[in-house]
Length: 378
Ligand SMILES: Cc1cc2nc3c(=O)[nH]c(=O)nc-3n(C[C@H](O)[C@H](O)[C@H](O)COP(=O)(O)OP(=O)(O)OC[C@H]3O[C@@H](n4cnc5c(N)ncnc54)[C@H](O)[C@@H]3O)c2cc1C
Image: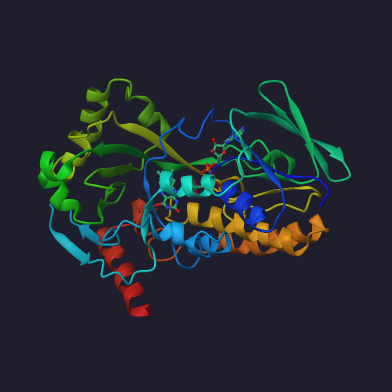
């Protein structure tokens, strides 16, 4: 390999790739739009699965660091009826294969594992173009450019690298989530804290759901899901936090107060996140010198797998490049042939069911059936 691998995006996928390349002595440069590692809150907890995310961390030689981040007890899970009745409950007995960590802390161990200067912050890609013979040029918003023999788009949902490979664009899934945070919940929001329990909790009816989990300390983080078109949300002024909160809470009228408290008692302004997805089975024909990983390649509605898959993509591409050190095309072909079917596989367990990606058809009882099916298959 004559030049650095050029990676666009310092998310979990791009950083895992950079780390695995570094482990194998292959230089890489990561160009990231954000001005610094602390530019945006990396809030949120991720469960890192033993069948994808943890495999990536093993390949990255970061399992010890990862184990140090695990939040004990957070794999506990409960399903509630909207009236607050607990329908299903599973404790965290320490044997689960999907420990929870804070996303920002996971990103930090990846950043800390890279040589200084690997990530070039404040480099927002404006456009990309083919130079021929497998080479590509990347233009940044500040007017600078780089040319590269291998360009990897790890730049998420709205990838600027993807147009080199595919005309596909993310489409609205028909559902958005509204995020809230409740701080010092055990003392300041005890009813909500008790309802969420030690790990995560979901209550749902067709088209409406409240998913919440306990982050580090006693912070509760809730995702309030509503299956509505984007026009419906556009009619709500999210700049007016109190009015937006009241409007969203109205949709959960009649639900138990300890559940609606996750909406009404938020300590931060509610944040609207419309959920987009690329077409299922998105793929492309091989184009020399460029590929995609993570959300840039296979954005789907949140199903508990996206970050795990992005990391596995990064690790697998890194391994393939190390194996075929002098044959970029052989490496990328091998990576893509395994990545396409992998990212297309149905999410299991905490996949579509638990996060209610298909809320219209998804009731608590279907969810419990899915959980118990999973338990029986273990
Ligand atoms: C509400 C919600 C909840 C989720 N929960 C989970 C979960 O529990 N478990 C799970 O596994 N997944 C979850 N996901 C999915 C997960 O967040 C993504 O799949 C994952 O972050 C994808 O990683 P990535 O590295 O591909 O992209 P990203 O994390 O999106 O990183 C892309 C990076 O590229 C940078 N970038 C973007 N554009 C440019 C540009 N033009 N120039 C330079 N840099 C650029 C961005 O700033 C960013 O740093 C959730 C998603 C959402 C929306």
